[in-house]
Image (cartoon, rainbow, N blue to C red; front, side, top):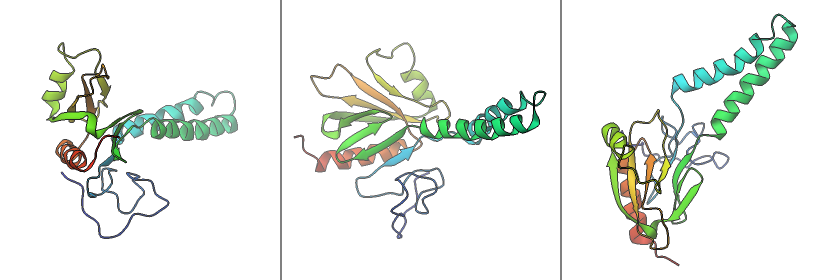
Length: 184
């Protein structure tokens, strides 16, 4: 399902794709913008629940020693685990003529064909035919993604495989950005 359009501007304090942003869609992606795409690869409810449980278990272990200490460790563990999960969640975005996927970035002018992948396509792309030089930004809880060809002759990376909940929207945004962006 595509993100919803919004007539209201995002809050200036909220980062693009921030789920607390009132203009963000239900899945944490930013609303459609001209040539724009911005998505955080947030885990699902089970991922957040397991992360919270891990943080709380750190405190439960200390109950036999001291209940106040166990409570303090549980609160700190919970906050730390949730913060770690949130900070480790990669972003997939088009920013200033570049595609960002996790920590990697590449000018859109150096990208070729974009192929949307469903669950089976991701599984096939990550199988025995995967080129070891490919850049991969996948999250197991997101079943779909894209395979993006890299056409830079100086870059040994043949393609990127990137998780996204909106493969068609990312492909459209990349095509639009490629037509309006020239290489330096």
